Length: 341
Image (cartoon, rainbow, N blue to C red; front, side):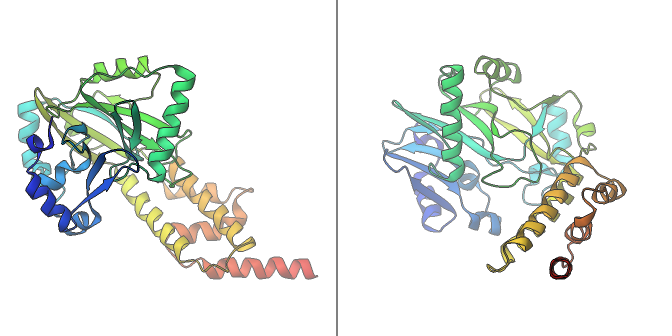
């Protein structure tokens, strides 16, 4: 499939020039990856072009090499009328029931192949830390499990879980690639869940779990150790309608997580050594508590166990988005006074 069959190239180039779409080259191959930019997200500039450029990989001759998911939104997102309750009810009535799968808290990985060359890109780069890590992970996987078997004419898409490169709100026991699905380059349609599971089994790859529940029930669910769900309404010969369902506990924990990350970035360079050791320990305990527990009473009990209680005041300050610095300084002063006695 040629790029001109998928997008208006003049309009695409206009979006690139205006900063709504990035166009990044491969370091050595005649390939370009197009992705909507941060400017698009901040200005909610979603349209025919920006929705379709979410890691679209194109060769210099115009051939589309990889076509990942188009941009899709969360339930009742003000940016997307198709996610509003009335519209979703109509779609569910006409297409239902949807396939409901786990929403994994990682980043999108796009498998591409050009001649003998291949790799895993993220939505905006061939060479980002996540892309390089994912490509190396897949190389190691092939070395241990044999050659990959993927359907011709489809783009495999993955969720990249690599918590050393980027901390996740949801903590996973293992890093790696999770196979999400295969997108047909010519039409945008996805393989059935059964076919995807068969390819995952053949290639010894993990896939998200599937929930056999109606949409109305999926919208009421909430589990502390998951980001949420994705509802997919498949339609032959065209891209499916997809909808994110993010769990309330995840949204609450994500807010806390982002505030903690801001605090970490705001720390002055001289605050290292024991200060950093105490803060890192407290942050680790908060992350673990948010994964394991939902109720504040359960979290408080965890913080106040004998092995954790020394860090409990900082943990509560982080949890409640309060200033933890005076607490650490007080702890350091007490530790210093004990040493000098």
